[in-house]
Length: 186
Image 1 (cartoon, one colour):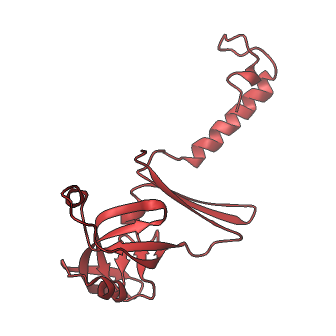
Image 2: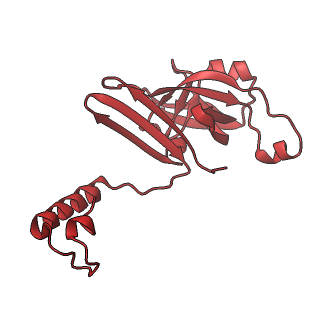
Image 3: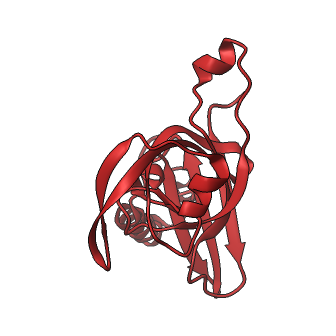
């Protein structure tokens, strides 16, 4: 079984808000499962992904539904300013079994149930594209690639220039193949 988990969200037209289903449970570690303890109840909520939020947050509705006990106090910086908030530990389960154990979240006064912040997003590969007016958001954890669109464009330009320069000439690598069938092959 692969260690990688992924999810994809596609939208016809421009996607203005990244929203997914999100399961939340009391914190529970893999070690507790191995000891034969049963995973606590997972309750489904709606989540919004926010790359501008440094950490994830939950609403009072989530706290009450799960009967969460605070682990301490902290501060949350929002558009409204800095506020003192209670902290909780939870497990977060996103679509396709993309899960995170023992995530420290704050309880914020917000209209959404769960806010997925950079503490989770940065644990994987996150990509949002818009092609032909349609949006695709995909996320994989753990990260497996190092994406650099600038480098991709430079490599494409270099390959295109070499194709124009070498055309159907023999590849300089000595393979005996034409350049466009060897190192010039996309």
